[in-house]
Length: 142
Image 1 (cartoon, rainbow, N blue to C red):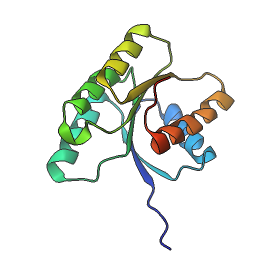
Image 2 (tube, rainbow, N blue to C red):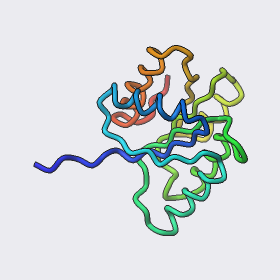
Image 3 (cartoon, helix red, strand yellow):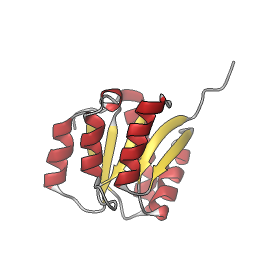
Image 4 (tube, helix red, strand yellow):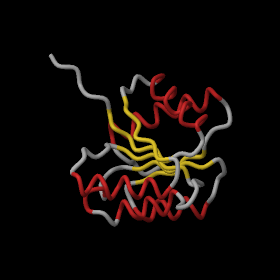
């Protein structure tokens, strides 16, 4: 039996500490993954467009920080949803602060969920199970 390939995840995050915490959260949840990291929104838009143009294997999930430089996470999500190949890829949008406006915006584009980044390590590690659930079951209304 051939082992399955790691799950490809587009991660739009400019904080290396949060990248590391998300890697640990997924490892803790036993999710074999490969991050494609974009450190700003413009880089993320290029990755979306490049993947379509070159036929690169698309990720199974996108995790987007709200406050990344140049183009924010919600605008990256809107671009994904306007691109046929990326339209149905589930997305998790995260921010350090709770924002009803961003939550409404994220939910309105569809197939996306909004999470507040936890401030405690144990809560951050628990995000791995939430991400695993999205990979397994898709986006569910909460």
